[in-house]
Length: 141
Ligand code: FES
Image (cartoon, rainbow, N blue to C red):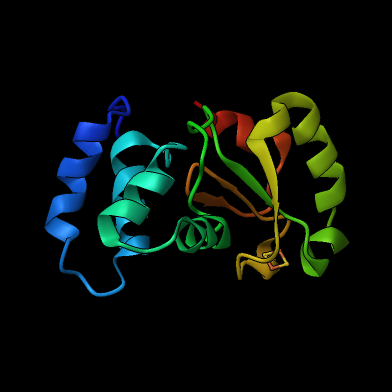
């Protein structure tokens, strides 16, 4: 993850190589997020103008894809599966405990395809099976 500070000039330099890409809005937003850690609020107008599409088009792409974020990243991204198989083995109790401890860093998710090893939790991209609060604490930054 990059720690570059948002700047319009820096963003424009990132967009320039994408000028002739087909359907460039998603690629542009991904590039901006990769560089700055998130999509800055000013990027919507910037991308719309640069690729001659409406702000609504850019906003639609930005809000459709859950991996795109409009705020700086949190210290940790904790996604807990609360789909049925994980609920059956205690993910709701674990969810409460994690939200008490890590608050807004915890987001619900719906099945990682790891149902046999539930409750499943993904911490900063790392999937943890048979998750417990102790296992999660061990991988938190
Ligand atoms: S239901 Fe939790 S990983 Fe599938």
